[in-house]
Length: 355
Image 1 (cartoon, helix red, strand yellow):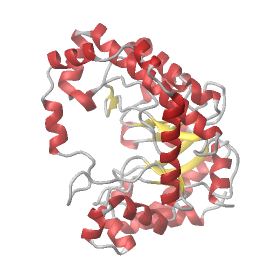
Image 2 (cartoon, one colour):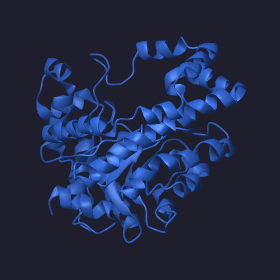
Image 3 (cartoon, helix red, strand yellow):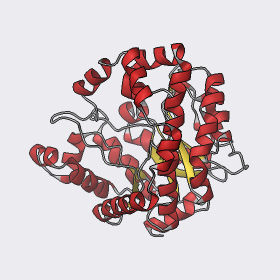
């Protein structure tokens, strides 16, 4: 079975020859260099090119992106400058920025779908050409409204504004829902045109390891209805939507699935997210879940042996058999301290597997 057919079958909840494997979260320049044979200078001159080359060496079926470090010698996509920019915001400056933003009607009126789609389609075609036989299947974090906004304004400022100025803060969520729906419109159209697979990874980190960072009651009133609004073009196009689960999302899983999510990705066992019971969950229409996972990167991938990795691959397949559609993926990024031997064993074990 070729890669596209394997992905099509799996995303349609049909049986393929083996589970596909997603790449793109290889945030380990040392491993990319070892896999491709490029030098450190070559890597940092073009991390995108060498990141794709490493995925070819491993044997990925699809990519959700390519990690490009923010600074030479690093591996993260944020740096001290990014964090310093967030620290400059105060509640007052954040509120002033909200007042200056266009409202929903203005955002809606300024949307030129044809022009936006031409650029969007051209970008997809470029990335697919760069990837060769690997399918470009990027994550889109902007097809949902943003609930918490700490990524822009910092934790303290964002949460203080939410608590003290809820009415003004609500505008941020509602306007981001409108831009999210516009991006979803473009993506749904690209899926219908055959430029993108019929599944997409998205989500927002709204939970810590202790649970939701804000009241689930607030989210049910202000956030999840707007998620449904933003996703409507994707649901109409038959796109499977997979939600990124970071932290302890157990209290929010009913809301995530009720809003229209078709699958889940991530699963930190240390937070109680275990595939053993997740595979029994169903979508709001009663379908099995599309699973992106479940290889967690905190313990077993970092500290286990190659034999442990193989066992995890086989165990995951058995858990999902006849219960959920499985696409192998990591719970989060593969960092430089994860042994390369475990990384290669993971990909090899999936390639050797058969349903």
